[in-house]
Length: 188
Image (cartoon, rainbow, N blue to C red; front, side, top):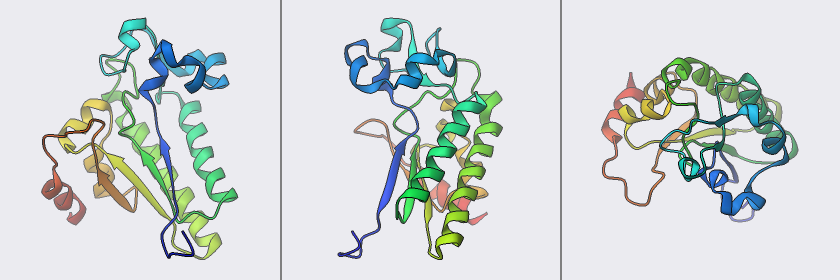
């Protein structure tokens, strides 16, 4: 990347629905997930949890837990401490859910707090290394629908709690992108 003047960006999936597929258990479940099921969404399963409804258990991280949020903040810090990246992408589209059913709106503020802390970690490393390091957030293409998965994307853009937002989709064919609305929030 450096040789060709291309930015090196680390990308982190904030959750992964593949972990809820019992046929893939051996390759995608960490030892921490196996030993600390209390940090997972578990049962009952949200409808947007991959194959979780089929197996009646969701193996995705439950961001309602401070320990889960702290773990990912630690990973952001470690990535920037150990490697010479130009940015870190937090990919919120690979993939929801992040909370148990009925707990989304109660966790908008804690997740926004998480984003503030992640942005602070990136800024600290940027200052320490004396170079621009960006925090990138991959978010749903529909800002209003983002709240349905527990992401307060309009607030994230307005504050901002990242340097760059990528409107994306967890599927191959999104129907609509709220680009004008996102730009409007950024200009507020």
